[in-house]
Image 1 (cartoon, helix red, strand yellow):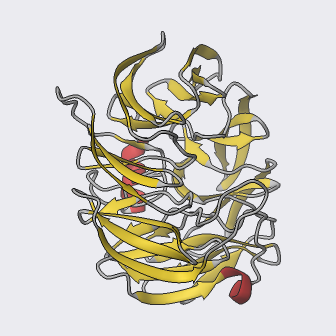
Image 2 (cartoon, one colour; image 1 turned 30 degrees about the horizontal axis):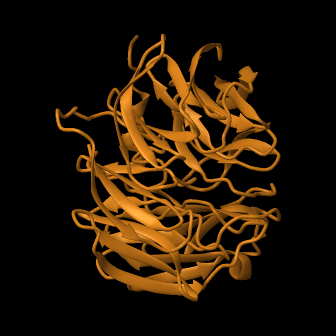
Length: 390
């Protein structure tokens, strides 16, 4: 099986930081993976664990610090922690504690984005902030609902901000021409708004497909590709309630639909683009997990089962019961962050999964994806933040 080169193209287009950083949701290129990772003969070990307030916000990593959002007393906060010890370095209160409904838990959902010494954060009620990564001082802020007419979903705003060049792109959710918006990342000035679709819990991504870069924006009714520089619509295709896109090759991508996933090929014809459906099934689901691509395999979860599909055809090759979890790809090592509170690392091929090591981190895992940097895996739950030495 051969690795393909689109991951390196994504890294270039995103201007991502070095592989020793995890600057945003799902990592440097929003694929839940890094290409460079050397295995160690040491056993997995819990490096540190601290108590943390409620929230689902993921962990951005860079500058020897971790950054996340959570509820602390009566406030929702942004905070930085030392990567080696877990000691909190600063905390910024930005809003009253967000009280969740419908069986969810209190606190922020969005994962911060870390670029150029700034941390970009979105609160559950719609607070969009740029804070200094060294101090937590607020540089600029907007409110998606109050300033741009964004419609707050039932569980609140959850989009993880995306940095594209000098722009910060977020889902707004105003179907009157402001489904998404781009802000000048240094000043907060609005650069453009676009889209007329209703939005829920989507996050944008940047993919190189069919010879150019596309800002991929799922919505409640469509998947669309925009020009990230000016917000002009390049193409759109019906796809109900998709949340996240994932590149499969230089011209194909994956997106969730209903209880499963669908693969598309983006076709270019006379400078026009259209999405052509390749396969669809419910053999994987977007629950705990966004799948990862390993050579010719697509690895993800269906319920309690870790499952491998042929990424070209969608055919299931194998499944193995591990309990619910989420996947992370480090080089050729598959890391599982399980709902049981364990971290496992192992290898997969077209025949199955071989677990090599595991360690118990907490009593119960969470819906929040793990992050990686400096040979450490970082995980959080509704009660704790922890680091595991790999």
